[in-house]
Amino acid sequence: MIDAIFQEFIKKAPEMKESWEVVQLFEEERQKFQEELQAYEEEIENARAVLRDLRAQIVQTKEQIKELQTLQKGKEEEIQEIRQELLSHKIKRDLWQLEKDKPELQDTDEPLPQALEVVEIYLKDHSIARARPAKRYFADNLYRQYRVLLRENHVLKDRVFGLDLENSTLKIELRDRQTQDKLQAKDPEEPQ
Image 1: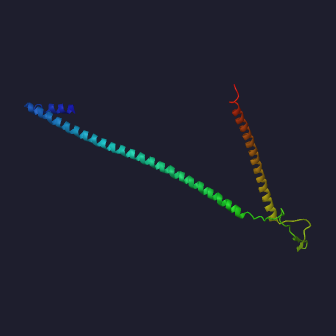
Image 2: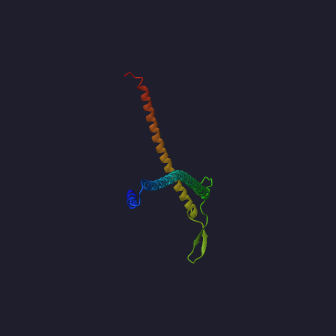
Image 3: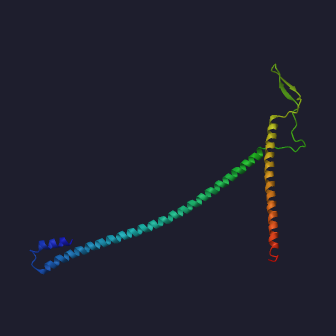
C-alpha cells in the first residue's frame, strides 16, 4: 500500500509544481485508506454480530438438547414401567388361566377317584367285549391328574422343608442375639 503511494508520487512528481498537489495526493490516499479501514471495521463488526448470534444459537440448541435428553430419559422410564406392568398383567393372566384350567378336586373321603367298574376288551376275533376288571383300574386322565398333584405335593413339601430350615436358623440367630444382649446387659453391672 505504502509502496503504491510512493510509486504514484514518483509518477506524478514531474507534473506537480505546487506543494498543495503533493498534500492533496497524500490526503486522497489517506482518505482511501480511511474508507478501507472503516469498511474493514464494519466487516469485523458484522462478523462479530454473526458470531454472537451463532454462539447464542449454539447455547440455545445445547439447552434444547438437554431438555430433549431429559424428556427421552423420562419416556424411557415410562416405557420401562409400562413393560413391567404389562409383564405383571401377563403373569397374573397366566396364573388366572392356570387356576381356571386346573381341574376342580371334589372333597371326598377317598384319596383317589372311583375305579372303573367296566372295561372294554378287544378279543382275537376283533370284537369288543365288556368285563369287570380284576384289579382296580382308573382312567388315564385320572392317572395324569394324580401324577400332577403328586408332583405339586412334592414341590410344596420341599418348599415347606426349606421354610422350616430357614425358620430354625432364624430361631437360632434370635436365641444367639438374646443371649448376646443379656451378656451385654450384665457386663456394665459387673465391676471392672
